[in-house]
Length: 172
View 1 (spheres, rainbow, N blue to C red):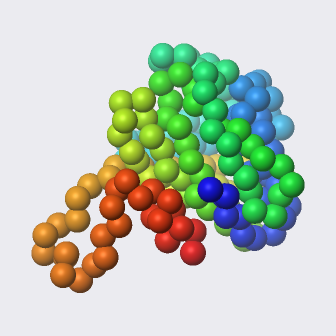
View 2 (cartoon, rainbow, N blue to C red):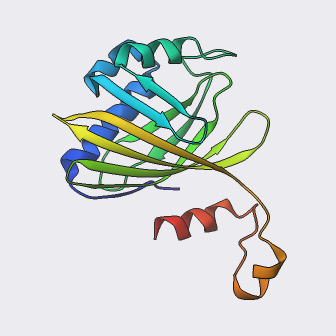
View 3 (cartoon, rainbow, N blue to C red):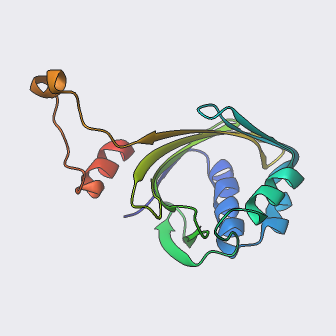
């Protein structure tokens, strides 16, 4: 499936460069795409990563193996001539990018992540850009769950095995 990309090309190119660095499995090159005072926030767990060097160390120490990835998945950003491989880094999930949007100094992305244990989570990420680099990212993780019975008369439920249909709805 093609990755949907909307918004100014220079902002999207920043994200494309981020994917290139991650796909290369070279955390020491992250300074090309992240500011030195980069901040990553995961509100659901209360985690805050402060600083580019701390983020690099986190990636390098990922349990079960980190960079470089042992398996890859290909993504194509619509409007780009380049295909990107998004690495699976040891115990990290396969990430299937669904959509990227940018406007001004903000960028958002939706992805579907499949973890080594088979669990599927949807991820929404929001980035703040500064000086041609990503300065801050906020990630929200949501596992799959069954629709409550009381809502079933009012909703169309997409079967879990039809990931492409759900991704198309997200990207529209």
